Length: 343
Ligand code: 3MF
Ligand code: MG
Image (cartoon, rainbow, N blue to C red; front, side):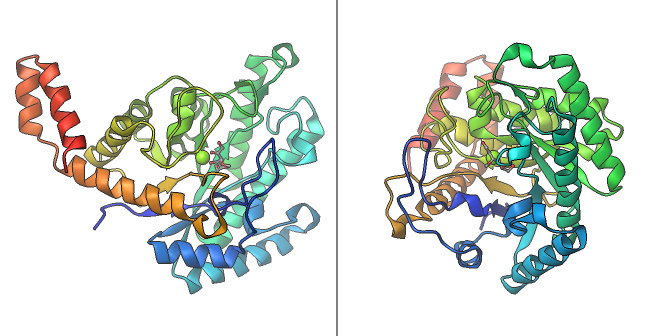
């Protein structure tokens, strides 16, 4: 029995299209996905605003809320919760040059409209968390934007969201690059600083995705630990990544097992989940996988996460203390390797 509750997004089961080629699998309906997620043992669903209300741009505010309530009924049917809603600001023609930090005032207003609607949707789905993955908030041509203005615009946008709803909590999902070259808010350290500069730091926290930390050249376990120390780690997207290339969203632990172990260990040591936080998986199945394998990466990630949870639960803190006292880190390191490699 895992001590954690797990969450997943509908985008984590996808057709396999990438920047260089078309889909390799059939589309699976939203209801079919969440029914399967429940069977697999997931407790909650993560949403983009338009995952729950497709075509929302053409709908009134009341219509959007009514549509979101239908999705809430579907969640109830399968006894699932909604973890968060994230405005999907990277797909829309209005956000080609960014959302909250766009050079266009109209586009910045559109981004705020989507953020407010995302809060409405979160309320209709019965959750109090918004995720900001700031996909296009940054530059692809450095001189096109000022880093100072962009940072201030981002804080202003967050303040507007905090003022719009007195209960909403914002998790910044940091990522250093892709699709932009240089992000306004690349690491959890930056997210914590934005939080501190906001009008209500108690409602602005972070979400760490393993692969995003690795793309910044950082250890995800340390990023997790940093935000935990601030009391502001409210979500994680566990996955994996082979080095600093494009965002691979590989199954948790398949490339960097020791790092994965240490992520699980730091979450367990610091009571992550005690306030209802979920362990989110943000993984993609390989493009080569056939239709029947559409969920295999999620099965594998869950299995690996739970196996690492068991390993972390067996970690010998007395032996660690002894090694630390004797400053024998070679022995400690070998102990960890044996813990991971022996059954
Ligand atoms: C991109 C991501 C995103 C976010 C999602 C929810 C599409 O690298 O990780 O997935 O996780 O938008 O915040
Ligand atoms: Mg993510």
